[in-house]
Amino acid sequence: EVPELTPEIMERLAGYTLVGFHVKDYPVTDELLVPFAGHKNMVNIGVEKGALTDACFPVFAAMPKLRYLLLDGNAGSGLAALQGCKLDLLTLNRTRLDDAGLLQAASIPKLSHIQMDHTAITYEGLLAIAGNNYIKPVAHVQFTQEQMEHFSQLQREKAKKPAQLDEQAAEECRR
Image (cartoon, rainbow, N blue to C red; front, side):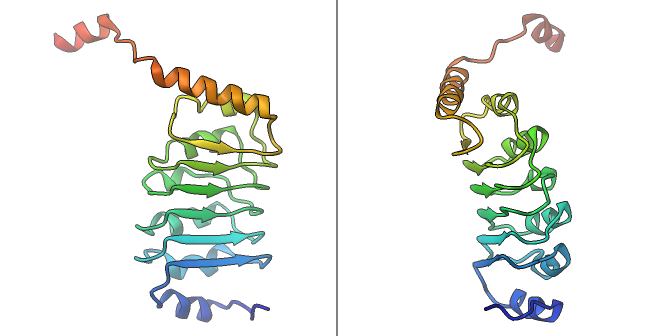
């Protein structure tokens, strides 16, 4: 049983030296999370099946130690605000995450795992991030095992191929 989370309670919680905060099946809104913006010690946040939208991402982006972000079942999917974060794990199952959002997630520098079942991501969208050999997408339902194995193979192949130097562009740069 969780008492009603009011802005006052959230202000008090944000004042503590918390390293984690997790709520499931409770309508946590973007506004309720605002007191946590800039929280210096927060490593792990989970708001599953809440009422979050894209407005929550700047709050998470302002947390310098945040590594694990679990947002299953929320409405937000625009991850551009997280580009400077040090996230390692991002769960976005049952969200509006699409191919464009997956590309944004793949450009989060330290992101190694993203869960994305029951989203709008297409197989072509998954293949579009194969150039990032660090990220490990987790999809048990969204894609078949064969598709995930093909993605991993493509990812390995892209990691082996050195970037081709455009000699004409290099010559222009030298000039």
